[in-house]
Amino acid sequence: MKPAASISLDLDNLWSYLKTQGAPGWESFPGYLDLVVPRILDVLERCDQRITFFIVGKDATIESNRGALQKIAAAGHEIANHSFMHEPWLHLYSRERLHEEIGGAENAIAAVTGKTTRGFRGPGFSTSPLVRDVLAERGYDYDASIFPSVLGPVARMFFLLNSKLSAEEKEQRKGLYGKFTDAFGSLRPFTWENGLIEMPVTTMPLLRLPVHTTYLMFLAQKSDFLARLYWNTAITLCRARGIAPSLLLHPTDFLDEQDVPEMGFFPGMKLPAAKKSALVEHTIRSLQRHWQPGTMSDHAAAFRSSAMPSPNLSMQPA
Image (cartoon, rainbow, N blue to C red; front, top):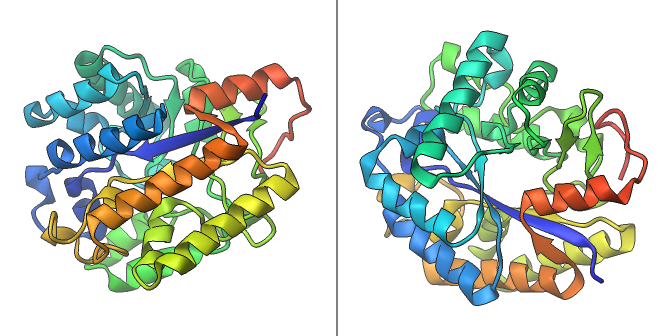
């Protein structure tokens, strides 16, 4: 039997990207879920693949999003929590505010999808010991907010230099994409001292470079061959190191700048959406050849049942 792996998608909407960028107009909560969700579900159906969707609570309160979110749940995918307002500075929140933020998202998502969330990912990989304690207090099974990449701080610097944010807003976002020390963390699932399972986003073993599909789209904009070679190299290294991947997708992996002109600033948006979908399908099918990819809950349950020793901290090498 093939080892368990996982695929997840952070369902960040247009307004959340604009808000993080400091661009005007996000306050009216513009969105593209009705456009992108059918595309995502179509690729997943062709691959016969169930995944985890991390949903932003605010989107579940907007009437125009209800149909798209209900389609995700009806297709049998796992529904997880991506915070209520998608603010990548959860590590600055108080305990009380964290309970309000996470609980508010739980309630809004359940009201639309009928699903109880038991998995969480912080926006922009924002996390802290207090965030994880609150998740444990609320009965969550797993967190997926660790991004062990050497390029996280580089991406943050590039983002801040090219944003239109005030000095105060930049200070809020200084934890975006994780810390440099995260690059030395485990690529395998592990358990925190409070019992919460951590499911790190997979990066390339040894090199710790990103392998999520958004980075592949950036490469494919220059060369589809290069992007596929890069991905295949990551798969080879994962197999050699015994790493069962946890692949991260985003809605922008199915959209281009013709679909959403406001997202022209985002990497890879010049690549046609059809080519993006084909590349996502390639990554999913290559995972299926070597692992049994499923939801994050499936992957966490497989880790829990394996009874393998778990590191106490994320600083254990892969």
